[in-house]
Image 1: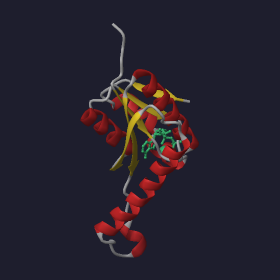
Image 2 (image 1 turned 135 degrees about the vertical axis):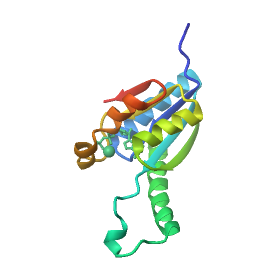
Image 3 (image 1 turned 45 degrees about the vertical axis):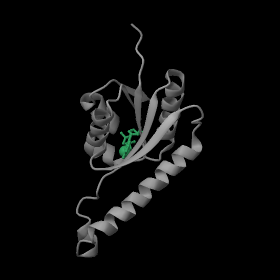
Image 4 (image 1 turned 180 degrees about the vertical axis):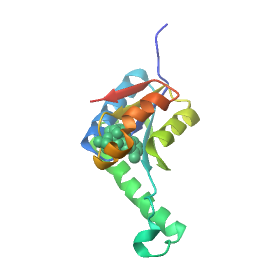
Length: 146
Ligand SMILES: Nc1ncnc2c1ncn2[C@@H]1O[C@H](COP(=O)(O)OP(=O)(O)O)[C@@H](O)[C@H]1O
Ligand SMILES: [Mg+2]
């Protein structure tokens, strides 16, 4: 029986690599007539209130993070060919690998696509890569694009 992914999720962080992964996901979605979700996750910065001395109001924090995410999503969508693909963008807040796995569960994804590398070096050294973590925890097959 042929494997036919109906729902594809791609994680993007604004990096070249993730744009390449998004293009791969879009091409795959076009061929298979899959629904494509283009998802970016922002992690609330650790101890962010320490910098300004007091916590900024949650709505301000959320608004600025959401704005940054919207920029990443807009840039990516502008740079990839999405013709003939039914697609949607989504913003999440949290730990990227966990949040991507949650989106896959919610959308009943058949495939999660991520780049092997992304925008950050420091975080990878501390946390291990998002690609490694989703490979272990995603509820669906994972395509890691080098
Ligand atoms: N915040 C994020 N939101 C959505 N996807 C992400 C996020 N961070 C990373 N990814 C996905 O995981 C891939 C690998 O990134 P990552 O493991 O974070 O590498 P690096 O350590 O180089 O940043 C990216 O190309 C992207 O597809
Ligand atoms: Mg990263």
